Length: 514
Image (cartoon, rainbow, N blue to C red; front, side, top):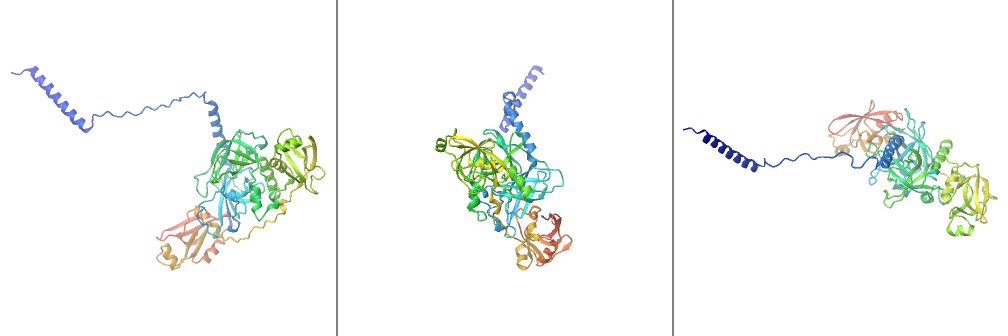
């Protein structure tokens, strides 16, 4: 007899057995492990905006500064003949050179570079002398990735300041100048550079922040280098002016010539050197005061050289003992050791005078006095405050001109053929060359070498390609190549028709440097 309750109990029993059996299988397969929930991520600020407002405002100021200033900062590449490639040892560590462990082809010279910044819509650019010194080719790269061949307007090794100029076909961004005399120790600054090289953009536009660590640093870097340089020597090395602004902002190779700006975006210095045992940043960076650089720039643009004023004295920094002997209120000033015969100070200054002011501006050291004098012109009248017989007196005199431009500097003459300016070297594709580069048979012209970071290298021209034609002119010998290149004007784009060992034909367009 059918019993509904019993039947229902059987269903419940067998269902329970099936559930437990299935649960066991699922457990064995790992199906019953708990799923991992997505983590809960908090996005709400944990510190109030009010609590960090000063720091946030400073951060916003840095962002605004970087966006405003960097468009006017440029990358500069220069090429020197091998015979003119002796960059002073100190600056060599601060000079951005690619692949320094590889030998540069002698016909190409030495390629190096640094930074600079545009100071006028006409295309004038300030940089360091050691970035462009003795260069026979200079190229400037802008923030929009355009580049222009530049002309060296003038350079001054005694201050490490140089001016180059480009002829751009569009409006140029520029930077404004501040007053480096008003820079205070402890104030925030940004150091900006553009150390990328060739067609690389990996290091374009570095912006670092720091404070002004000190002023009036006389490091004798320029003086020592000039003394060792046979072009100058010890006699004129003393005219070097070193009145650096020190900063803890990170400055590394390639930033040389870039601007140091204050929080209002005004240039107060030009990055120039670092003190380091490795050649890289160790906490000591130095910049040329912009007041000095501006004065030098004006002379370079107007005369092509610097007309340096001088007082005509031999001087040294005041010591604590000097301050006691001469009755100085502080250990500060410049002690006159002797006066140059027939110089501008003869009859106005005398030995053991202590100069403490120039036109009312305090003078604390030899470097500071030299920098302040350099802001004037030969023939200008200045008033010096000096301590004489333990009392301050006013002395007026007319500045003379330093004999720095009497130094003979004859650059080596060098003929640079068009193919070398592009950065390529060609040879006949004889049997040996065909075997070396992988061609099935000899005949024609092959590219023997391509200079690193040259115009040809940037466009992808490489060693081992067979050069078939230059523009519309077929070439079969190195003489044909030179003849074809001679028809190309500086600044024009030349089309190189090349073929690789597999028979692939390529056309590479390269602009001929000026």
